Length: 226
Image (cartoon, rainbow, N blue to C red):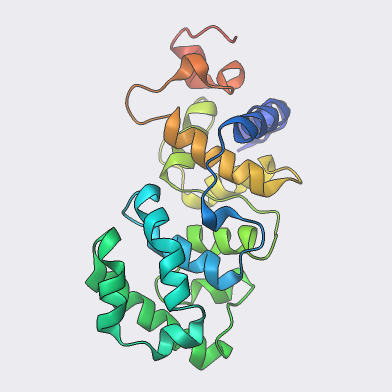
């Protein structure tokens, strides 16, 4: 743990600079990333993005919100209608059922509002740590990091020498929280995009990655720092 803290401190500046520069140049302008999105709109995006591509969600997102613009409208909607709208992204039966259960929970316990605290968000059916943190960061403007599979891969490669081989999620969340700068939205989105496009599971593009100067994995592979 001490080694990881020292590595986070020594690499933080380079990581922030690299991720923010990547975000400015290559950030993907999806509708759900707009700063004026409501907590409900952010939550819906996170649910739709599971187990599908962002491009598929982009074809559906605005239409979904126009038909179900709030928790109240989603709660009142017929599940079969929701399934029909969700056909574009697949798994429509499971998604529709989950959205109805979520809406019922939010109507019953939160008067149709999205809770702000992590613990309350985690109690919403279908909301895990990633989604709760995403809602906190993107809807409530909280300076927290988010860890999906892409971000986890980046962290494990950059801190390969000091992250435990099977480090738990809390270790990764604490690490990314340490790295998040004041401009947390651009950083979080940039880290997601970098992990998806460059730090891929196979054939990572280390040669063009802005983090190669401070990445343990790139160094181990003999990659020049650039």
